[in-house]
Image (cartoon, rainbow, N blue to C red):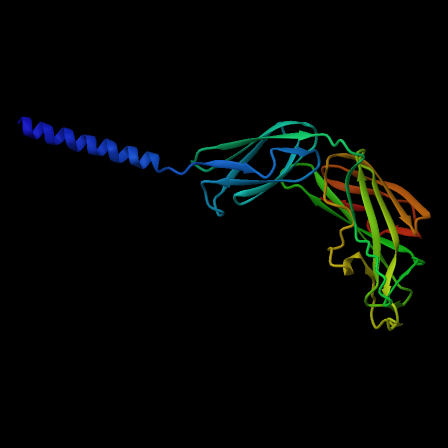
Length: 269
């Protein structure tokens, strides 16, 4: 009898030990951020570990003043105001994981700036003034989980029924700390001796031909409000207007019918 009891006791210990091993083998769930301190308006990247890319996750942000765009077990996030934010991700039936990110205000004059200026002493290159109207093609990307939006523009020029395949608009762009959008169109960069011919079909040249996907401004999430927009051509002529962001649409307040025109006045969500 004692022998039977001893065997049963040893078997029970084995079961507990096996269960303990199984519990210890549960993968550690974690949520990682590329940066745990970031400037308001900049984009941070998140990665949920302990799961698979195909898993369905529930994402939350507290406080809610942020634009979160999840994709499988990753996400990008941008914050609308300074503060400490807690982001949580959880797999269905799994253990939630959180990370805290501190958003701070910019200390500089400019939030973002970019350019595609290229200078060269090669005698095959020439820089010529912009003498035709500029068409501003706007684009808006709305957040899937909030009311924030990214607004951008593709400036193009029609070369008066003629074309030079290597012509490129050169530009500088700045989004200031006060969220003013300033675009400076410098000149048109062409190849010397470029074969100019009557175009066989409608043809425009502009930033879309440079390999930067038509982006004049760096990406920045914007919340509801009105944002000034200024376009300068050849460093002299200035055109000023604005655009208004709401949860449902982006409206461009742009009065010009020549010089710099806006192809669309409203972009719906």
